[in-house]
Amino acid sequence: MGKNILNLSIIGAGAMGSAIASGIHLAQKKILANPEIKVPERYENTEIKLSICNRSQEKLDKLSKKIDFTAYEKIEEMISSEKPNLLIIAVKPKDISEILNSLKNISAECIIVSVLAGINIKTIEDRFPFNPIFRAMPNTPAQIGSGITALTYNKHCNDEHKNLVQKIFHAVGDVIFIDDENKMHAVTALSGSGPAYFFFLAEALIQAGINQGLNLEEASILVNKTFLGSGLLLNSSNEGAMNESVNSRSNNPSPETLRKAVTSPNGTTHAAISSLENNGFSEIINQAIQAASQRSKEFS
Ligand SMILES: NC(=O)c1ccc[n+]([C@@H]2O[C@H](COP(=O)([O-])OP(=O)(O)OC[C@H]3O[C@@H](n4cnc5c(N)ncnc54)[C@H](OP(=O)(O)O)[C@@H]3O)[C@@H](O)[C@H]2O)c1
Image (cartoon, rainbow, N blue to C red; front, side, top):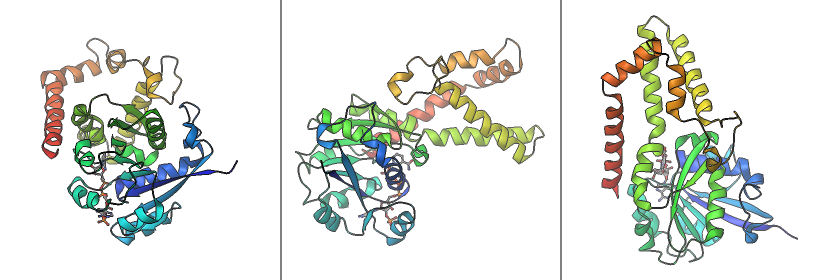
């Protein structure tokens, strides 16, 4: 049997569009044959044909040094030539109207996936009322295949569409389906922006280490490796095995359990945690997430 072709087009070769494209390119062979997820019959024995459109040529040139795809500078041209089965929109939210205007000739069968923060499915659905539409919120660790993408979708998305989009985003990490689009503000605040909080905490810890007499290199290595190891520990199952699917991680030790295991009464960790608690650490984090969630609501 000959191979089927899945025409997958991406609009935007910026940070997120490039990360997704690179992940798809690297995972091409396993995406559609991932044994953990049921393969939609229509896409069995399928090869992904990747096309990418970006406003400026430079980003396309840079990306084409790393991966294979057909490059376009004009969206209309990509849509008419490629006739995508799946289209990922990865431009800034402010550019959405211009993008939707350029999609006039898209087939009603094309699955549209938007990764734009704060843009509702309804904004796209108002223009394309019959298309299966997904709203995805990935995060930057997608660049190294370790992202987490939250997905929500409209009423035209069936199990086959969901399986396919899940597989595509599996190329850049894990995937979680969110049952209510209103929760995407919280998702954006938590995991979309989350890597920045992690890096901010790393910055503060490195500086605190320097204040205690370490040099920059020493403090950086200690913080980086502590974060890496702690992340892996948090992610490991009770047996210590790494799993690929988010759902199979439900037996993980909670962060609280892991924290308590490091914190002996009146020890050094206890002194630090007490200081954080006394200075309102949890409430500071709560307010930060609330602020990000509120900003996301203002965008939509
Ligand atoms: N980065 C993240 O951590 C993250 C996480 C989750 C979601 N997102 C979402 O992902 C989206 C993209 O973010 P990003 O960080 O990748 O932004 P970005 O680096 O600015 O990339 C956007 C790209 O879209 C291109 N573009 C804009 N208008 C276009 C048009 N009419 N035709 C073709 N290409 C066009 C831009 O091209 P030029 O630069 O050449 O003008 C740019 O390369 C945003 O909506 C954001 O909310 C980002």
